[in-house]
Image 1 (cartoon, rainbow, N blue to C red):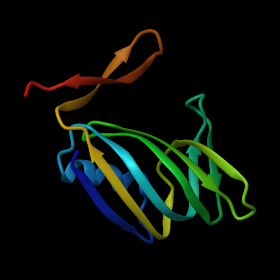
Image 2: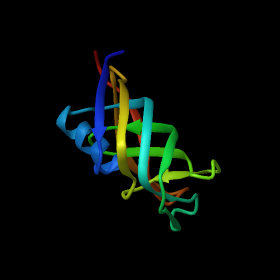
Image 3: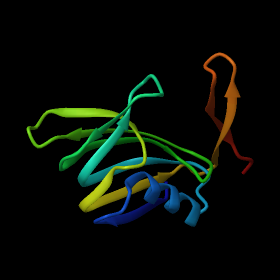
Amino acid sequence: MRTICKRLRRGEDLLLSIRNLAKEHHIPAAVVLSAVGCLSRGRVRDASGVNKQEIPEHCEILSLNGTVSEDRCHLHIALSKEDLSVVGGHLVEGCIINTTCELVLGLCEGWQIHREFDRETGYEELIFKECER
């Protein structure tokens, strides 16, 4: 498995930075292997797909998991707030890096991620497609 390692810097939006990295490297399919750092503020969406919550304080990134491609990023994040309580959800724009985020992506060689409308869920869902080698 090939990896891409990138240090994100103060003021960068976490999700937008990951999307830009995927486009810059023409990533067909990858997963987040590690993300360590802190945010000056956070923003997550709940499972309803509608409600977003602002976290207007410094947070440590405890976990960032999901899939990354040029076409789509589907990421979930867990954050530790200043009182050490934990909040998490679907990563959305608005998570701003405070000092740093050390990001490591693992490329899933031989695979591509696409989107396809799923009548059952009502969403554009990820489709994993194995590439011919």
